[in-house]
Length: 345
Image (cartoon, rainbow, N blue to C red; front, side, top):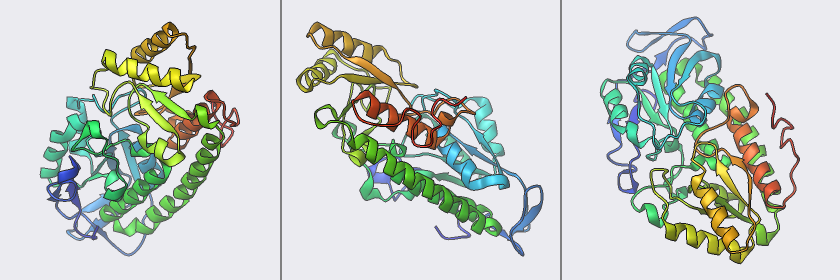
């Protein structure tokens, strides 16, 4: 991105990834004599003052968390979606629209994750607001396009920390465009955080790699772990497709049960933001076939844990997932996870 020309990009499909997703916005890049601190102000090139902390509105908790880390004390972050909220199904409320209109900067995930908010983002963009999809920082060649979701990319990129790390860098660039005086500050925060994400990525490789090969299959309610499976070489199966709006059929369940019985899978997983009824149906159907399957634990897929807890952070969320999956499928992982903090209140 070029400083001085923030853009609004909406990643709707493969065909529109780099073309019709960009609307020019009013330039709001800061200028001044040097870095500023919280509760002070600087001026843009147009003479409009930036009052610190300025307001950033985000969507899902995963985006909120990384923006909080990058922005530090320069911005006040308001996340629209809390614990257990499914972004696929989320409809913005009147208050959400008000928050978005009052924001100085808006950051969302993109790739149609927040599909029902697309019109709202377009409206905000037309008002001259800097609006960014953080997944724009990921090279198109990296993205998955599962056959059942032809024409759209898989939006669940955060399940691979190495990919989400690119989104962290993009968030730093976006904030630097708005507040150029503090660009070095944002870049330093992003650099430090990305080092933590690299450690998380290495940990997940190690613990998932410890699962016996015949048991290395992750079965969940909906197809949110494709990037995770590719990154850590574990088969991923689900009852539903990429979006929780899809309905599971009897045929879908029967095919999954066949896979479980053939592979002698010992555990499958529920998700914090998805109804567990389909997983329970799979377990019951497997039992009818003489195969005992347990719930290996609850994973965080489209939403993080409770705010204020370790699992309520992106790193805690992914530490939890990697640890629970490894332990549930017979691998080796410390009970308290990478940082010894799992389960902290």
